[in-house]
Amino acid sequence: MMRYRFFFLTSLAVELFFPMHYMRAECKEESSYRQYNEGTAEHVKLFYQLNHKHQTLDFVLEKKREYLSLQRKRMDIWEAVDLFDQLVDESDSDLDLPQRYHLFQTAEMLRQDGHPRWLILTGFIHDLGKILALYGEPQWAVVGDTFPLGCAFAQQIVFSEYFEQNPDLQVPLYQTRDGIYSPGCGLDHLHMSWGHDEYLYHVVKDFLPIEALYIIRYHSFYSAHREGAYEHFMNEQDKKMLPWLQLFSRYDLYSKCPEKLDLDALLPYYQELVDEFFPSALSW
Ligand code: FE
Ligand code: FE
Image (cartoon, rainbow, N blue to C red; front, side):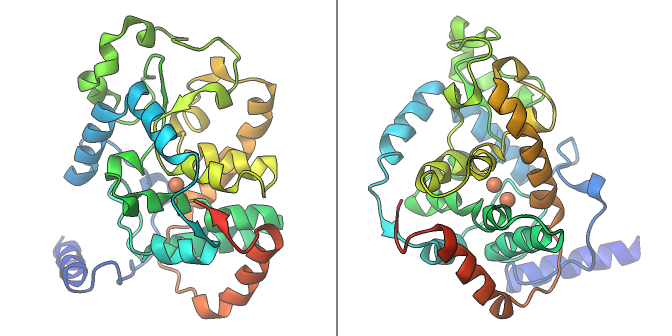
């Protein structure tokens, strides 16, 4: 107990003085990731209260109009990585390092397991859409699990009890199983809660294979790919792609480790990989 308290206080002190620059003593048990329950940190609960209250169909449609014409900026992947590094992800209780480590760690774990280059690249860029936060979007409109709007909220969504305050609850059509959609319509017909998945998907959609795009677009849709919800909206293509999401999510989560990667040494490999798939500037 004393040791634990010491570790906790030391971590707290280090975090206060050197925010996000300390490393965990060791990787966690797989079962200890994504623990969303009574014991979840208050700031994570507060994050989901806001997220579930404010993500409505109207909000999502407005954000799509605002962002998906991609006229905010022209920049390459590396400029986006630099921006990405400035963020804090309030929904994530598992990562304590500077953000770019999460990209390198996910990608490196995929590389070590011999996965194809497109999948390693997917790991390397999958969260770059989080730069939405630097455009002034609140965290609840950038990170966290995603879910469809315009139909009933699944019980399997993390902290689903927080939907109590969502205005869409007052629209009877939105609270039926199919809502504004039809069964088997395919996930690409759903309006997902607004965040980094959908945004990055649109930025990179002309440059990557379909499996990669699918991972980027739905990696935060945990209620579907981890808990089996919303199957009734999936078409044949979704069912084919689902295993990629499930495989990827293991790397996304369990690579969040204090491994001391030498980012400078890794850089040439990733520069070549990025150049293989992307042009020198992308529209964001
Ligand atoms: Fe993500
Ligand atoms: Fe991630």
